[in-house]
Image 1 (cartoon, rainbow, N blue to C red):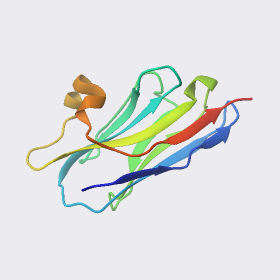
Image 2 (image 1 turned 90 degrees about the horizontal axis):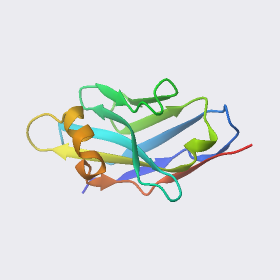
Image 3 (image 1 turned 45 degrees about the horizontal axis):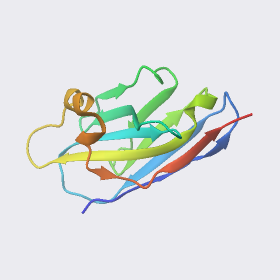
Length: 131
């Protein structure tokens, strides 16, 4: 069973930056999609960014230009670089994964199905943006 664990959350002032990391335990899957979600108090879980195993990415319009998703060369760690943070970015941030035995994982499928597309989740890390 694959495990995921986020780190890097914390408190920051508006305009600041944070980089979240998500360590993905060793696995043998060739095809997968990895994603970042967040959940603000009283709100539904919101998709932020997706990366396919071939490196293609998609970033939600709400954070486009401020957030960047990437993966290390060894494909064991997922990152979310967050710049120009706003108060409304406050929430619990989760990494998630969809692994496939056969066939590629497409961002389009993930966007269509949202959080339900992903079945492996980390525990979450709190990000608080306040002055």
